[in-house]
Image 1 (tube, rainbow, N blue to C red):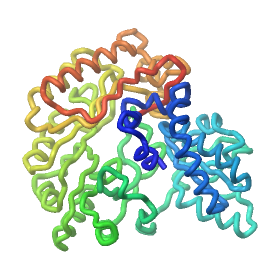
Image 2: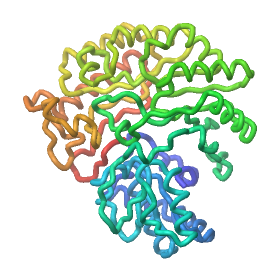
Image 3: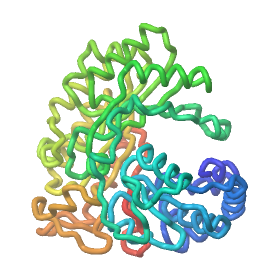
Image 4: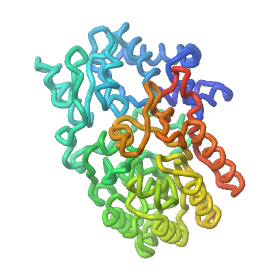
Length: 435
């Protein structure tokens, strides 16, 4: 539905989808404006669903699409009062978030992976079972208390079927880049990130199965360009190299990219194989080049190792893209300058900045669970961006000034920025948790 709405908008309205315009999709007057413009598309979409007379309508929810999802769910409830409306996804992972959503439009929530709960739910509804007892499903009319658990995760990703995009209007997309999934979860535990808590165990497909998926997409959709949507494409370096070797062995023509972590096992030899197999770029979430900040983030490497790996990737002919965060607790102007000086000194090895953000406190990350360890204060309700240090040295305004210094540096160095999260909607009651 998202891509259909985008396609039907004029060029000016397409700016609503730019990353920095998240405010238009947040609760409040601006969302009312968006939904009013898109009402014909909403009605047509809901009518199309109603014609199929489904017994379950499921939505994958994140912080960004939640208000729009609620609007569509309300219309579905009006047209299909007997259908069960189920929410899943990262946006409803935590009980406190789901308690805000309990309404007549939502019947239940899937906690964990939908491939576990959805077949059991359909079986219960079609065969007279008790659908509220489905593992991983939480009934909106009962206690809201479940948290992500390893018990609700699929043990083997090889057991899953290859995702089917045949019903998608692929011709409306601005790229033919198809998504791939090598693994789920993340073995790292960065202190600002909540992904490992939402997906509390890392699992991966076998390289052989991954190659099958690629061949399948190439045959069905003529796919050539692929994006690995893993949190870390190189969470298991040996598997990634084996996949690349299989691609080369079978002469599979493809180009691919993905997010990665600084890892000393990315040797020159391994990177040469990745390049030969079609790896065009790696996005490293380094966030900082200050050893003090990297240690506080629990990144597991220092700036020297970051420089070594980035140099290897650059030397292999693979584009180096980085994510950066400014204003992490404990960062002073000294640490910020260390990052800026690293960028100046190694600009020739870095192709672009994918995301540049001021530090926020995501739900259930270590910063939020243990603010005392980092000397920060979390004022409600906008603590995600309004947090400040006990000594007053790091505030929202301070972080904004540092962010603009980094923006100016990127412009000075000619470093293209993919997304800059300024979080300007912090106190007017219309902000959301993250971009």
